[in-house]
Amino acid sequence: MSESRRSFIKKSAFGVAGMTIGGAGMSANSYNKIIGANDRLNVAVVGLGRRLGAFPEPIAMKESNVRLLYLCDVMKSQREKAAERFSKVIDYSPALENDVRRIYDNKQVDIMIDATPDHWHAPGTVYAVKSGKHVYVEKPCSHNPREGEILADLQKKYKKVIQMGNQQRSSLESIEIIRDIHNGAIGVPYKATAFYSNSRGRSPVPVSAPVPDGLDWDLWQGPAPRREYKHNTWDYQWHWYGWTWGTAETGNNAVHELDVARWALQVDFPERVDVASGKFHFPDDGWTMYDTMDATFTFPGNKIIQWDGKSRNGYRTYGAGRGTIIYGSEGSVYVDRRGYKLFDRDGNLIRERESGGTEGGVALGGGGNMTTMHVYNFFEAVRGKEVLKSPIDEGVKSTHLGHLANISSRIGKGFDVNHLNGQALDRDALKLWSRKYESGWEPEV
Image (spheres, rainbow, N blue to C red):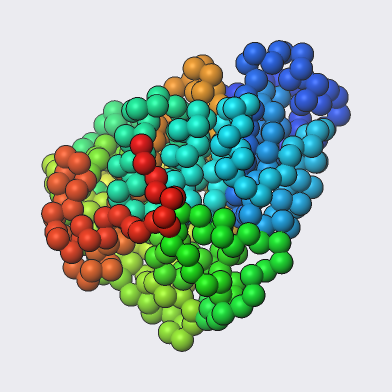
């Protein structure tokens, strides 16, 4: 562990003196046995792909006091790689499982971490909560607006702790500057620009192909209607191959930045959404969705959130690959995963703070300081020892903005929205409010 990393952990809510993961001294497992099993939580991680790196540290930390019972994925090689990775930070072997339904049935599992593809997020959360488990679900927490409504009802009915992986809600620097914004640091905030710029390359044109060795294609599809397997679908490219599984870049990355914008402006649902979008790069490749989007959400009180999303043009319009700018009557704030800068109305820098952490930019997968704190906060909220940094209804509202933008893009027009509940006031938009499910897989509260 680097000195900057160690310093960051010591500053966090759970930072205490003691062993470092993988270092000398008492193992996490031995420590857990000493402090007792009554407070220990049994965890299953479902989906062992690009986000796997987010979870070894918070699970292995002695402060977390959890035991990993299952590593679950529908691809055999993913399970094996995950087992190898976790073997470096824990001294016991979790069970490797292909079928998540066996985990739902196991009453010993307290927590499910859901890092599956988008089409699994809400249904998987529903199945897990109804089987008695708390859920940490990666963003976007839903595939469509109706699933978000289902998640909100689910939490109210079953009273389980559900947190989305919008980990910037646990950033110490973001918490600090958002608090200051709410206390008048930039006067009255009225606008936020959320952005993401990446230089993703060509996507292969999907063609019919044998199901890869070791992949359970039927379970990978799960709640989605069954389709023939095509080359390269299961490993990340599903994001761009239509709406059966993915939610495009707005569901993939905009949710993070839109969440910060909503948090800063203290707004819930908009009154209107307008979108300009298109596919402007590699016109003959397999990417079937837009790769560029400008979206404007208008909220009550004349507040505005703008989304500037460029999936395949890496030009850093705002000086970084991702972040949010908040404008107020007396100043402005630039905030991203690395920290923030506070400016007065004349544009003079009056304060800045950097996290010194390891989580930022537009690189795929991984994990880092914010995710570690976010997962730990979730564990402690399950125990009733901390207030959840981002209750699922907050995740639902931020994800909902992404859905509204996607729907506007798909129907080719903007539309009005009921700001009290987020419902679209447009017949064409409402046709895309939900989706078709494979028979027997429908998520129901």
